[in-house]
Amino acid sequence: MTPLKSYQELDIPGLENLIEHQLSGGVHALFILGTSGEGPSLSIPLKKEFISLCCGLVNSKIPILVGISDPSMAASLELADYAKEAGADAVVVAPPYYFPLSEKELLHYLESLVPKLALPFLLYNIPSHTKIDLSLEVVKRAKELGALGIKDSSGDLPHLFALLKEFKNAPDFSIFTGIEKDLPETIQQGGHGAVAGGANMFPKLFVELYEAAEDQDLERISRLREKVLWLYQTIYQVGKDASRYLQGTKCVLSLMGICKDYMAPPLQRLDPAKRRQIEEYMEKII
Image (cartoon, rainbow, N blue to C red):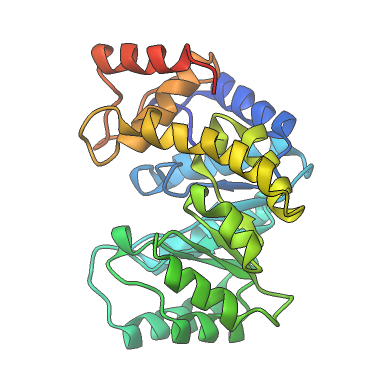
């Protein structure tokens, strides 16, 4: 997530706390300026400041992946160039949002963008936000262009399993789920992990679930997944806004004293009544 004081200012002490929280929790990498990071709502200067601060604070302890998705290809390339200068390890590319795209247009976009990227890249499939689902054909072409892997946030398990089957013999191509509760199935089917928004709050929980899945420890998987499902049933369900998952997560971080809960417009933080509801949930041990 991106700790903010306002839509124009980062919460720098909060960022320092959040990165320390992630590192001490044992996460294997950071993906910044994605959906949970409110990337599309932030200005390019603010994104650049955030990239620089993250790279400096992490100091190469773990890889940093930077979301560069933007309706403007020039803006995406500008961020990729800056991410390289700042010391990031890779960029993450989702289809440019706003205009509905045909598969032909998307392929042309990737073939135009990728040769100009300053860093290695991963794909990001999030059709709920981009209006297009990355088909096997698109993903295969992206791999030919050099893609290192894909984060699939489609929520479509058959599609995820089709990706896993297609690339099972491709050791240089990693497949991550963006649906954190599906982490065990992803590992069991030959995938490589999850980009878990809930790890902003509870990094150790998701690291342990990953390790349990790698070890095929079914009892431990079941016990840990109950804790993940608790998040889905409580923190992620407060209010009726479509953004309630993000609102709840940032609210928890503020209650934990990690960072402020300000959200960049058009999103809004939870109101006091809903915040109290989150507080009540947090009083219970998960």
